[in-house]
Length: 225
Image (cartoon, rainbow, N blue to C red; front, side, top):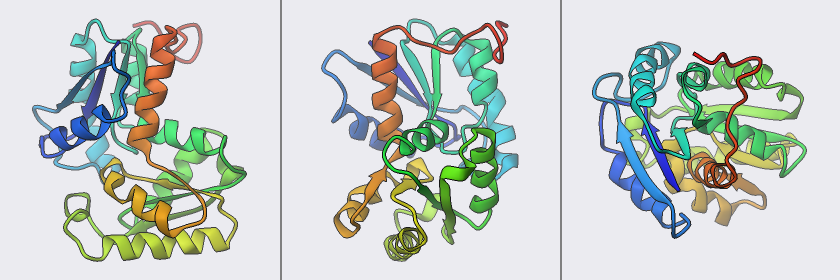
């Protein structure tokens, strides 16, 4: 099985880290390729960033051959629906996959992401997916994507927001940025709840669905372009 992971940013700073992280959990017969964009935003934090990244993502998807699945490795899922129209290969987005998986693990879930616009973005995404009644809380920590690993405040802010989410009824915490994968185990050790890390969950679901040949239907929402 061959899986492509697209980091939808113009910097390859994440590629090696993501490859090493995902290869640790990959099936022995899974071949993993991690790529970033030749042009586009350095990070995805706004709808504008998504719009700039989407054409470059589509170009990669259109040329991709021989893959069992392709993953858009960003919680905002830039270009996800368009890519599903342009390809017969299984296309998964980290945000959609993580949030739908969270509903299998508890009644209510919370999304902890980056930047103050996260609440509006992911409440809107949850409505689009029909998950609003399962979404208990959304918060964005005040740290840009490219600074989360180096900021001494990231861990503290995530734990504080997670505790708030649990107090108001969340049972599952979803990390709302694939760049936060290094903090998943920290939250698991400090919280009495399930923590969903989107890159890992999406990769393993891609392996599962790809192994039995499932992909998006082309008979309704997604046109066969």
